[in-house]
Image (cartoon, helix red, strand yellow):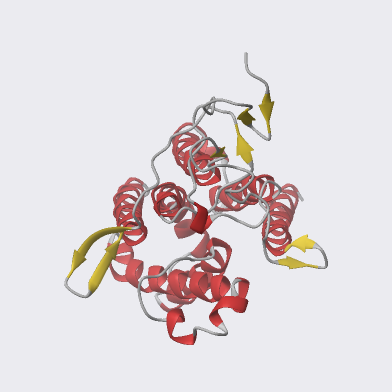
Length: 283
């Protein structure tokens, strides 16, 4: 077996490399580029809608709430995600202000989207006199699927990758999209694969959706309203913190990745609410 250096075999082809580097634009309609990133979100939204409407019917809830609210909540999530990303990449956007709002969009911060989408959902449901917790459980598996589809936009944009790897599913990243730590001069494009963190998060989303749907059907009678939603937040926080530890050149606060701090706060907050509600029910 050849010796590996920084994940690449010395003097030979990479042991694990998917060599294709994709074009982020799927279709060019005149001056308007249709990006794979947007297609991924559209497919994720469609999958989430199907799951949420089915769950709403199964629980005896009014499906019209999904129809009337999904666009508002989605737009709120996109706005929050965009704001989070722009703050993260302010060194670039401070010199390219128009790029904040003009296509092609090259990034959304999921954590920002979770916060603003949840706030929008709470406001709408309060206005419509619906139970937030009941509907949050409906949204949770759909949110997992949305994440699973949307993360493939990161593949086409050649982002959200980790360190060089010799695993068979390592993805190629061209020189233009490399972080400073792994330039093509030391990690040749033709022989270096990188850990596909977007893929791991996508798989996590599929597994999370399946898990929540199975729990809801087998043990739903033992759960309090809103607990599936809290499990989703905790699950996402744990996965995000784990993957964030593999990234470099990320937005930090006090030397700690900001995403780790935000995800940790969301996860711990959700855990605290989950435990607190359980203890209150026993008391």
